[in-house]
Image (cartoon, rainbow, N blue to C red; front, side):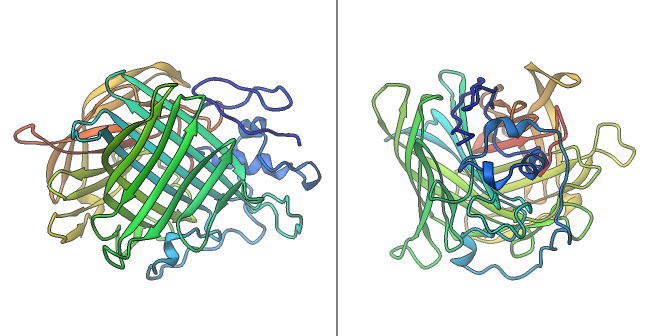
Length: 424
């Protein structure tokens, strides 16, 4: 087969042809390059896994002849909508959280596992089982607070043959690359019909990390936007289906390098989102946060950015939500959320236009209150230029009360487009 599984940790590797392969990254933020690569990838030469060398082809869009179907707004239905939606162009399951030694509440690590599914629109009329109709990517990262280190790794595969699958029936998604990376859901009948149990498994010898975690829901699902319909831009079609499962109770095992496996506990957040639309043409990136507060409340906030100095302002679109510990929730209107950068960190890596600066300390203003958000490690940047074509930042952060400075929650902050404009 003209391709092999890729396993890297911020380094260069080689595929079976000896060509340079990829360095780690989360989502294919140059996803159009994948479509361009697959356009010339014939069934006769198809491998079960997408060859790594094809990931770095020039960016180009290849819509189907009829154009992409519009995403039709509808009520979400569970458990069906826990599963994959292969008719949608993009989809992801995104789990983030913090871990502490068993018996402790002081976080020692942050973790992330994301599965990303992409419809290629390149196999219409092709009956071959090898036709690349769907791609699955997985990215994992582990922030070591004491060691001041970010570990990360990725997988990429075409769907099929049991090696990479996303079930349409429920959350059962995996990419198998020597070791199995998997996220699976089962109903928690004892806790109630709307509660879930998840199992997250990954092993990366290259990054020196292994996780086997149980995540149990403690609260109902949070439907983002308007009953799960989340606008992502000024045009009506710029929207996604989006729900969150915050305040997941975490327990399990973590192993680093060749050390012993140790018991951990913590708190996690799961997002599941699917969409048909691309970013607005004026958008250069986004900032997003999902925070579990210690009192049981949850905060989501995001904004899509225009370029600095744009006459209409940097904020193109914004949104988010707040759910109190008592269960009442509210969504934020686009003009009601403000991100104000207070302190930036300069990456030691160079972007296309020179040094890259990320705000790592923010003031977040929302209808639910004003907060400070601060990264727990400045360098949580992922260099995905050899695969996704971009640098971006994603990592464990603390939420502080804006008045007292007291820590009131933990969660993840994501920032893209500070080096290069991403795709979606």
